[in-house]
Image 1 (cartoon, rainbow, N blue to C red):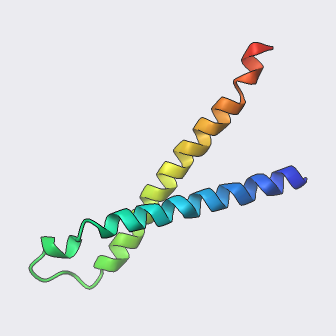
Image 2 (image 1 turned 90 degrees about the horizontal axis):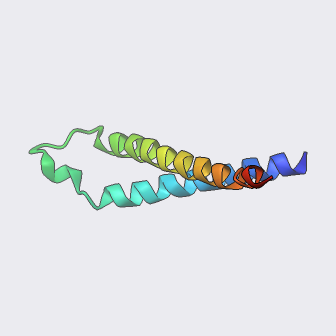
Length: 76
């Protein structure tokens, strides 16, 4: 039971970390320059994009790590 809780904690930390990295990267784009009058919902769009990109990248990393962990069954 403790192993499942630890895996859940690691998953949450990785996902939040990747969302933070994606948000930090999106800030470098300066999307407000693309509009003459930036919409009021532009910050919300950035948060949603960062969440989507961060979750996608975190899921990819967790899937790769799971596949690597399961490679030991190939040798048995």
